[in-house]
Image 1 (cartoon, each protein chain N blue to C red):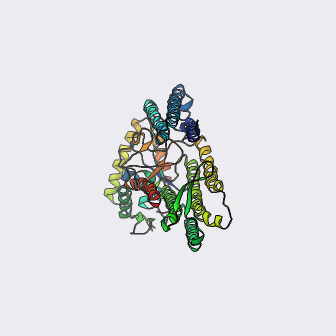
Image 2: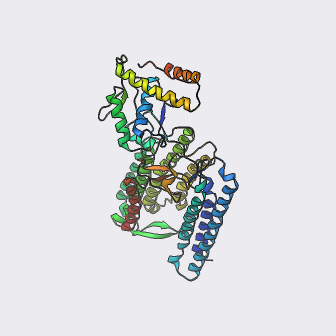
Image 3: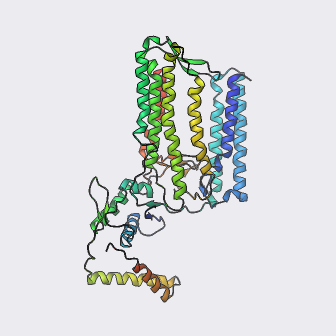
Length: 340
Length: 132
């Protein structure tokens, strides 16, 4: 099998393993997006539901791998990533089917409670500290601008798995500033998401307040880690050619591995929390969870709520601001294309 | 230590705004919310409870009109100092006696004994806090 196919197959298997366990990483009273009694996953119905989901998941993954291999063998390279799409659609559909089958076992969610304490919650590290990565990006921009003559005609901006560059930008202000602008946009997306959770999601309260507080902080820490590492990554990419011209080499693996380590280090506590008991339910109405995955509740002013499939937070799609949030990643993708 | 909490019961007959009013007033009367205590903003409390902003805004307005809260634009709502209990009028007394009669009848229908009802009422009345 050729290199890209091996990589894509490995990725599909890794994602398959992730999806295999994902339904079990949730609040104790939530199972396949349905509010159920604690321990429902250990009942015969609960076990059957998980088995059904996993059968569909691995069938979809097998089809995805075959499609990827066939597309690579036939030389249809653009079709190779379609395997990932097949796998994703299978997982969403399998979850939705199992969700519907479990609906008869649903129990009434706990009434939503609210603390009457004033809102004094802050971002981990504070908002002012979150501006430092922007200063780093600005410093990188000044450094590159003042060493313009050291830049090569073609600047590497993308690398293959072997560590060799496979994407370049021209030595123009737009081409050179590209990585810095992308770093800035990602900084904005991550910080915006953290603020949206902080201000736009329900605060911890009620019986599972302690668990909710820890889960919320863990998610905010992950996002703040990305607020720092993403600009650092792109600042590194921007200054690397200037450093290389002065015989100082920044290994590409260091630039890419650092954010991955940060993501992993801050995701593990979230997964551990998702396996704890005593986390209760999320108190959102089941009827507002479409396919058990998409939250749409006009009566709820929250912008963000906890996910029911996967760990972290998702948007309340009935909140108009959520569409703005969806537009940002699209703007980032188009921004990257424009900068190339 | 976490402060007092309120909850919205979607199955309750009372509208959400009335539930917010009743619970905050109860917390003030019982002393769980003292004079000067700051309450969350309308937006914050609505997001936490999962109700429309207008529901909480209406509840705060009702509590302010009843003399329980101080609400001014751009500032956090605060529990108002009440120097003395308002003068009890005959009509108000009659209204509450009538409500109590209905409540006691409902409790009897649910199986409470007269002694239990008396205990419950005495316990509820003894919660009266220092703010009044």
